Amino acid sequence: MGMENCKGKIVDSRVSDDIIQTSPNSLLSSIFGGSFILMVSEFANGEKNMCTDIEHVQKLQSKSIHPIFRLYGWQPWAVSIGFHQSMNHISVSECSKRGIDIVRRPTGGRAVLHANEVTYSIVTYCDNQQEWYKNIHTLLLGCLQSYSSEITFEKNNPEIMNFRRTNPETSKMCFSSSARYELKFRGKKIVGSAQRMYKNVLLQHGSILLDQSHETIYSLLNNTKEVNTSDLLDSLRNSSTNLEDVVGKPVSWNNCVQQITSHIYTLLP
Image (spheres, rainbow, N blue to C red):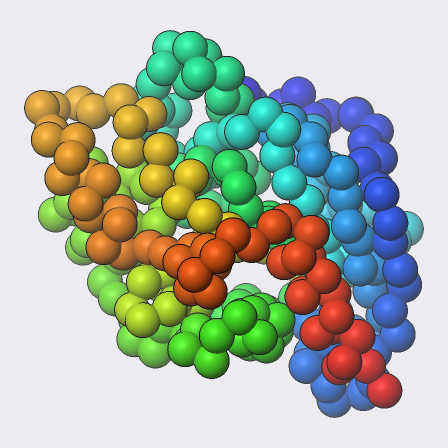
């Protein structure tokens, strides 16, 4: 469950990848510079997925690879805990009973159940974290607007820390609130993202929800006080949505990946 297990581990989970040359002054170049690797990976367990991203950070720091935009999935399902979040927030016994992994994420944010989703990670050089955050979500917005023009930015900047203080149980779940520039559909969060800087290298993770399976996380929480779990589920449903609900039919992992990669190629010279 700890990231210390990644030390010295060599991970290669690539299924396909392509080195993309960007055009100057484009959205892609503002995120990745002159070139980057577009990588589609296999489904893997929590530890392997997180170790792969850490390995990419280390390789970019040593300038042995290009920046990376990676798309992947999870098998089995896994709960990832934010880098600074307490492991006590999640019930180890309940996850074990259901065959769900628990892993610590190297990025910030709150707990996420990685179930039916497309997960992305971006590893790139960065000198302005807020600007890169905005640019990455601008890219994601373009990728997902083929599903609906009503997918938009969160325009405000909610007081997330105040929300966590006043909603201690609900705020254990990533999709219970939205930060500025995160993507929403009709006021509900559809992509959850988290970042961490490693000196001048940015690692950003995100979950693009395909269906309602992420909602199961409410039943995996380790509540420190008596809480009505149906209230937690209602809160999650009121604050998050998914691509199946957006388009009114199931959206497969392959379909979503194809939408993302196709949009990226439209941005090339």
